[in-house]
Amino acid sequence: MVSRSTVVKGSSQRQSSTGIPGGTCDVLVLDAKLRQSLVVVRSLGSSGRRVAALDSTGAVPAFSSRWCQQRFVCQGDEATDGYLSLLEQALDRTGANVIIASSDSTVALLRLHRQRLEQRVKLTLAKEPALGIAINKEQTLEIAGQLGLGIPRGILVKDGSDVLAAVREVGLPLVVKPVESWLWKEGEHGGIRVASQLVTTEDEARHVVEQLTRSGGSVLLQQFLTGRREAVNLFYANGEMYARFAQWAKRTDPPLGGTSVLRQSIAIPPDIGDQAERLVRAIDLEGYSEVEFRRDSEGIPYLMEINPRLSASVEIAVRAGVDFPLLLYQWASGERIDKVQGYRTGTWMRYMRGDLMSAIASWQQRGRPGITPPARVLLDFCVSCVVPMSYDYVDWKDPVPTFVATTDFTRQWIGGAINKRLSHLRRIFS
Image (tube, rainbow, N blue to C red; front, side, top):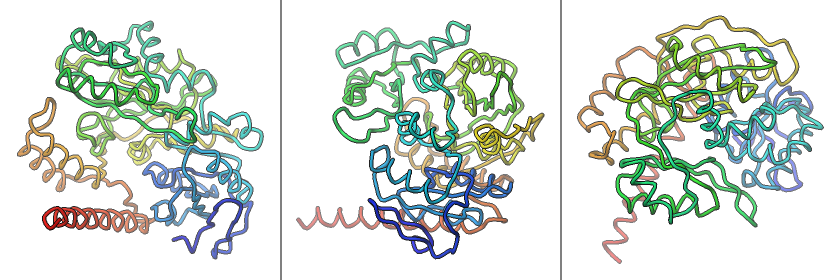
């Protein structure tokens, strides 16, 4: 794959063998390894836009798409000054007028250098301070509470000394949730992504809080909700709602609140549809957003968070008739934004690799609150194999990315198994 790409390292560049000259692309898609980035490449490429993609590794499915005209491998860590320099070199070569980023790290980097970058390229990010509010769960929940939305019972904690009192007030089990998913490292280059964790004891809660606050961030200790997980996806700009979509996640990876790996398009529930729109308008959060809710045992919805960047689950919306990547490009580039009036409900979408990982994780975590029993996990996984549905990566008009993703997973799976076996043998004979 690297032989067909431009490799950017330090100040050196090597032109690809594709014969495509620089300055011929409309959009540069970052985070090419992510599922949603492949969706962006396919969406914009099939609509006639010229697409370039960039990542820190060369073996990613998006690079092999028929719609990816230029590929850049940046051999530098994400969210660093070095990565920024390499990104600007890629902009010089492509002449792209729009950047689309989909990871916490690259969004954080673009925000940090926003003023500098916007002198030469359009960023598909909401304006400040709306974007900062959406990324910060504490601020989001505060506004949601003022609007009368249901918010989980929770307490803000900044270090381990406050954990015991917070645990006793919220109750166990509970979820320890970082206020922001990306934290810059003080005095260092780059940062770290932190994720929510379920805890069932006071000692476990103290350990997780200390771990998550080590880099200086704060966390929320929230009540644990086990009901259906639903999301409303919106596209809002210039005071107008251009598109609406809703889905529910049957399974996620990790099993308790991770990325959806089996999901279905649904009609927008009146309660969370209204709440999501009021929240986005109150924040004035332009562009794409995914507003996530979790219902309790009685079906009452509670706001979890807002995701103000293209989420991994966006492909189901595109398959159902709501092309969010295209809307995002139209908005950023100043084109007329299409208004989407409806979409197909009942569409199922599965991320096979993630679903398999979720099943394994459920087995390993059996007996913990909210985890489906192993026998039911196996049955549900097998039943899903015979239910008609679409699969992430699979597009018969663009088949090579499917092969690349499958090959990569197989290599990692076999390599991981071999490494575990070798480690076991070393322990035996050492």
